[in-house]
Each structure stands twice: as C-alpha cells, then as structure tokens.
Length: 387
Length: 127
Image (tube, rainbow over the protein chains, first blue to last red):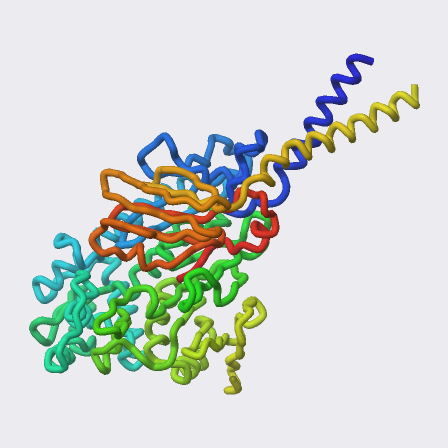
C-alpha cells in the first residue's frame, strides 16, 4: 500500500507538470512563463529569459536538446541603425541564428552609408565603382523599382535626405533654392549601370546612392533563405519593425503580425495572420523632426524634394519578397491611396497592402482581406476596381 | 481491493488538482512586466502593476523609465538624439521602447498570469 501511495504521488506530479508545460504559450516566442515550470527547459518560451551570463547577446534557449523539435534560438542584434531580433525554432535553430547574425553584420558593413569603408560609401565618395554580388542585385532591383513606380522609388535621393539632416540627425528645413539645386542630382535615371562590368557611375557630379529603402527587406529575405537552407520551418525575423516570418508557428498556426498605429504608439491598426511573408510598414511617424511647430518626416518625395504628403499616414506591404516589400512600402506611401491601389492592381500577384489615410480609414487589398482583423473602418481594394 | 484502488485513483486526481492550482497560484499574483535589456543582457524585470521609476545607469549613459498605470514611457535620457523619449507609451505584450545609442531595450512581456493577453497578443509588431 505504501508503494502505491508513493506511486500515486509520482503520478500526480507527472500529471500536473506534464499538463502545464504542454499548454498555453508554448508557441509564443516572447512569453516568459517558465519560471514556475520545471518541465519547460526545452520550450521556446525559455528563449526570452535572455542571457544573464554571456555578453554575445545570445538568448540561452537552444539547449542541447537536439532530439526534440522544441529547441529554439533567439538573438538581439544592434545593427543597421536599429534593434533586431531574430528567432528560429527546431533542431537547427542555433545554427540558423548564428548564420543570420553573420549575414546581418556582413550586409551592414557592405551597405552602410555611414561607415566610410562600406562599398556604398566608397561608391559615393568616388563617384562610382565596381559592384559586388549583393550590390549588383540591389542596384538591379532598385532600377527595376524606379521604372515600375515611375521614379517614386529612387536610391539617388540621398543628397536630399542629407540636406534635411535625416542621414546625420542634424535636422533642418533646407531652403527652396537648395532643394531646387539638389533635385537634378537626385534622379536615379542618371545612374549609369554597366551590367557587363558590374560597375556603377553617375552622370552628374555630386550624386550619391543609398540602398536604405530596400536594405532591411533584402536582409530579412536573406535570413529567411538561410533559415530554409538550415531546415528551419518556423522563424521570426524582426529588423527594427521590418518583419519577415518563415513558415508557421511551431503549432502549425499562422503568425499573428500586428501593424502599429501611427497616431497612438500604444495601439494597433489591426492584426494580420500570415506565413512565409515579409510584412513591412512605412509611415511618417517613425522618423521625423519638428521645426516652428511643423512636423517633417523622413519619406522624401523625389518629385518635390519635400516630405511626401499625399494623404496616407501608414503603408504596409505583405509579400514573399522582402526586398520588394521594403521598397514598395515607401513608394506607395509617396504615391497616395489612388495611385497605390492602381499600382497594386497591376502587380497584385507580387504583394498585398494595408493603407491608412489621414482620416484613420483603412484600405486592404483583397488578397489578404480575410486574414486581416481590425477595429478600424476597413475598405477592401479589389482587382476589379471597386474600393 | 477494488474499492481501495478507486480511493487511490481519486486521491491521485485530487493531488494532481491541488498541485496544478499550487503551481498556477504565483502566476496570478503578478501583472504584466517590463523587461529591460542593455547590450542584449537582461538588466532587470519590473512589474507593470506597480507605479515606479526605473533609473538605468550603464557605461553607455543614463535612462529613466517610468511605469505609470500599467504603461511605460521614457521620461529622461542623456543619449544624443533623445529619440527614445519620443517613442510614446507602451503597455502591450511585445511592444518596445528602444534607445539605440545606449543599446537599451524596454519590452513589455506577459508573465503568463493574464492568459487572455497571451492568447490575443500578436507574435510581433510591424512599425
């Protein structure tokens, strides 16, 4: 009888602990309910109990439990002037996150306009130069986007960004004369790209380029590729609010991606359920300065040289292609609602979008309309032209 | 013997129930929390249920976070751009305030006590 009671107690323990660890927040990457759960060592939830003990910014979650699919790895990285978190689940999570960090650092060193040694900074300083594999790809994509958006996506905008102080933080409103003088230098049409030689030069002195409009989307796309090569089927890439999700959550459900409201920091426009997509938002609320009571945001319209002001306050692009999502988020913001809808109708197989106008009304393209939930008034943009 | 087995089975279930409750109890006492990391390392975790001022002094500089009525905002910072002070208030799970120059991140987390929150919370926030 005594044995039976002992066995009963053990059984009770197993039932209790086993029951707890399998429920609830196991698929939430950032939940941290693990302190009281002894059986949760290999759970993803332990990933957020980050690294008290080491300085390599690793989260300590991917324990050696490679026999279980519950392994996960998450890492915080400060790079590309922002704060990034990359998370992967599954047996190869740690390897995938290692490689992701290396890729971020490699691309940052290559593309930063701030670091004098970067390839882009060298091209700007020398008025041209030879392109590496990554910058060749980025330049070709940039010039394609320039064409397809009728010049709205423009990597040559850099001298104007500089004049407004968005590259340095020394914000100022440039004079009309200064803007007039700079506008001829900020047209990507004057970029000379020699495909055979993989080289770039500028038709006008003083031109400069910046891949900042697509660099993060390209980077998240590269990380998604790395995840897939590593066999990771569930992962979350957050590069300073530019998000790309790989696969689904570990329980097979779609990722829940919230879009921040531009008006109130503490609110969402809505939540999108999605898998294997980049979700990238542009809005004037992210980077701006105020002068004489007027707000000036960082999305400069290349046709005017001033911050874009075409009726939209937030544009989110949803696409399997991170580079495209990044580039189009600023482009559609500059275009305004009607042109953005028109552009989507011509490219609806490549992306979907969520727009918010200055009255707080949302417009969602029909490809994702069923996956987007919101408390706001929401209209559906349809391919046949009705809004 | 059969009767005793039944009693034992009942006892097992009862014990399991009591243990389950006991393990859950501590979680219901805590509200949502704010986790502060500097250089990717955890600096501290603070309850949002309690109004408090959190001063963070590191080699990078000084930041002062204020928890007020369940929301967090950056009250003071001696970073060059002061951008963290303009990031407003946060209170929802996964929301962050980031001070890049000081490599400081304040993030709202759910400690699991408010299960509704955890289920409804998005996995990630795009901005």
